[in-house]
Structure formats: C-alpha cells, structure tokens
Length: 251
Image 1 (cartoon, rainbow, N blue to C red):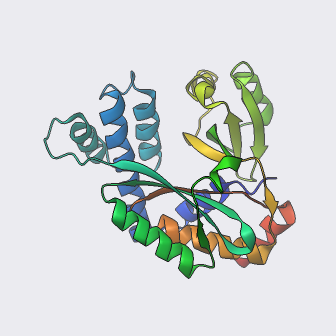
Image 2 (cartoon, one colour):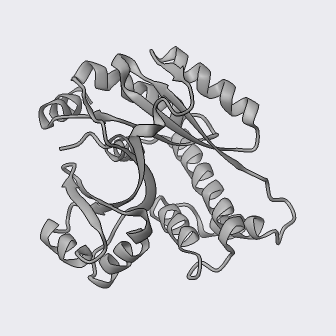
C-alpha cells in the first residue's frame, strides 16, 4: 500500500481543530474563486469549479461562503483578489522529495514562509526541476471505503484508470487527468459516493520510509499546510502496511 499524500491529508482533516478547519475552509474558498475566474461561474459547465465546490461542501464549508466566493471570482462584487500559482521544490528528512503548490497574492511572502517552514523541519529547498521531473499530473479520486473495489473498477473501466488502491479507510483511484471528470461522473452514475476529485502530482520514484522518517516528513507537511498560501504538498514517500500501523499506534 502506498503512503499516498491523501493518507496524511485525510488523517489531519479528521483531527482538525477549529483553527485548522478555518485554514482549510479559506484554501477551499480560494480554489473556488480561482476556478470561477478561470472557467466561469456556471458550476455544471465548469468541471474545475464543480469539483472545488463539491470538495468544499464535503468539508462543511457553508453555502453562503461558497456563493460569495463564486461572486468574487466572477467579478460580481468588485473585490476579488488576483492569485498566482507557484510550485516550490525541496527535500525533506532523509532525502524525501517534496513538491509544494502555492496559490498566493504575494510571491515574496509565500517564498519566505515556505523556505522558513522547510528549513525548520529538517528539509532543504531545491532548484526548479530538480524534484518536479519525477512527478506527473494525475487525476486522483478519493472514494470512501464503504464502496467495493470491484464496483469502482467496473464503473471506471473505460476511463483510463491506472490504479485503485486502498489506504485502509478509502480507495484512491488514479487516472489520466483528462479522464478525471468522466471517471468521477461514472462513479456518480453507478451510485458510488466519492470524497474528492483533484488533479495532483504523483511521483514515479517512490522511496520507502520507516516510521521515524515518516513522522518527520508529516511534521514538515503539517508546517507547510499550516501556511495560508500553501494549497497542497506532495512527496515521493512510500509507506508499508507495517509502517502505517506503527504510525497509527503512535497516534
């Protein structure tokens, strides 16, 4: 079983306190604004906005907040903010590759905060291209564990699904990014609920990590995800079932 970034993200969200929940909501709302600005305010006609709104609702973001974000993104309120997408690269503990995706209205602030968080958590920043070459964009759909793997495969068979794996609580469906909308629509048509559908960066050069290394990497991820400008953190860390069990036992 892969130590996919979703394992850490899901675990953290479940344990989120009010402060973490507020930060998560702010990031989800920012995604909605950007998706609206890029593809328009029609949720059904803008797949990126549809997925951003769906994910926000799954994380209990109030509908009023979602509606305001769409209006800001469409320019209806005149107070929208221009966000820039930036990718930073680095190495975490024991050489684990880290790709940090930011959505910010202040490049200098984002760069300084990311560099500080990485340096404080046993990591180092890397030159552009030194880490990203091993990551490829993939469509990643998270399906609750109540569904069956066979049902998921049957529903998505014709939509370039590359892998369906379990992290113990959920199934992670990986596909070509151009097929993600069709794959999640196929799941819906089959009556299979999903938690989120995102285009993520997945490494082709996984590194096995022991529990001690994984704990340090997750602390680095926590520190980065705590930054307002950081939207996603991806690594090439791979965890065996035994290491996952050890981490679970440690809480």
